Image (tube, rainbow, N blue to C red):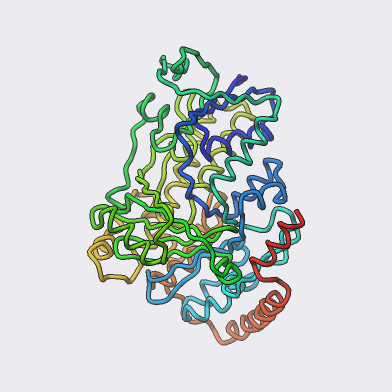
Amino acid sequence: MIKNIIILGGGTSGWLTAVYMLNNLVDDIRITLIEDESIGPIGVGEGTQPATAQFLYDSNFHPTEWMSKTDATFKYGVEVSGWTKDTYFVDNEPPENSLINQHLLITDYFGTRTSKEWFDYMPSYQLAKKNLSQKWYGLDVNFNISDRSYGAVHFNALKIVKVLKDRCVKHPKFKLTIAKIKDITTNESGITSLQDEQGNFYKADLYIDCTGFSSLLLEKTLKEPHIPYNNILLCDKAVAIPKEYKNPKEECHPYTKAISMGAGWRWQIPTFNRIGNGYVYSSKYLDKEHAEIDLRKAIGENKAEALHIDIKAGTHKNIAVKNVCAVGLSAGFIEPLEANNLTWTTSIIRLLTEAINRQAWETNGKEFINGHFTSMNEEILAFIFGHYHYSSRNDTEFWKKIRSQPLSILPIGCQKILNDICNNKSSFFYRNSSMFNLTQWFSMLHAGKAITGKKLPPEVEKYALYFIKNHYNRIEQASEFFKNHYEYLSEAYEKN
């Protein structure tokens, strides 16, 4: 039975693991987090998906306790521009919005229609482009009234770590140790102890690897092989540069932008106090100096310091091995596109906590975690690959190369996902393990001309128009109800 857990690494994944387990483990389990202060979090991952806010809520964090402290803003989705002929939007709405009514999928009705018709229909995009904000106390774009329903956010990644840390260190079952690990001993069952530079030893029943791309416990110590994605997704570098607001009422928009560039793409993420910008690129087609120059030119920022980042794209066949479970970047990383890593991370933490609570770690717990991890990994990889593969940009060597990658380059599971979706096997979208719903897949594939709809009978068209008319009225009412995004958050944060 697990009585003691060591989390090695104090970045975002380490502190997310600690705060969730402290609030959700049912047994009397002691948690020690070992943090090397010379290694800080990367600190540029400012976009999330709805699962992150839900995860924090389930960790006993109400939004009033962390949003203002982390410069959080609302995020309706991601606007993807320059990848295809028409700009498209991958939203964060719930899967029920995949239905026009109970029996008619959006794919059936909008598959034969233009992107403009589709995005005129999408409430999240309409409100996002008008810079209108959801309500802090749970009233979202779908008029769901719940503290946990407001969806995705942007936040300052360094500040969320501080908020999580401040909460954890007050918990009686938690201990923070500042140390640099220099030696790790093992036997046939896994890790037996960690030793720091001062000669102190640390032992636990379970070790959670949150050491980032170095994957110190899983990969370097237990020799779980890393499976690189360099040949599939070509981007292996990023440069990030923040920018101050000039007109926050206009610039602090409630969505992320993903804009194509000559050797990759750039993000624009508006947090409450600044705009996060980054260029994700392939070093085969662009060096770091020119990547920084291109980004500065694109965003009009010449003074702020640039942060250059190496991207280790890939995964591991297993992340739960012997007495180690990897969480966050140490488990794997695919691409910054669509803010998938934090969702991946929080999902693993939930699975691991569930396995411990069921006392199943030594029976089927590791198999349970590894199976779900593989499923999530395959869907994320397929989704990200689809953005590139179905793009229409073809004016640089980078875009010519990445668009020419055949589906056969993907793992078999990814190929099946894309084939099922493009062949309209809609049951795929309702798997319990799905990372992306039908609306999100449809937006990307419809813009890339990868899927087509079918002409509906006149009676069905007439029936659909009845619901769509009511839907447009709903968008109009919502536009009148919600306030300017920045102004609303300013008022809410001042009250808080």
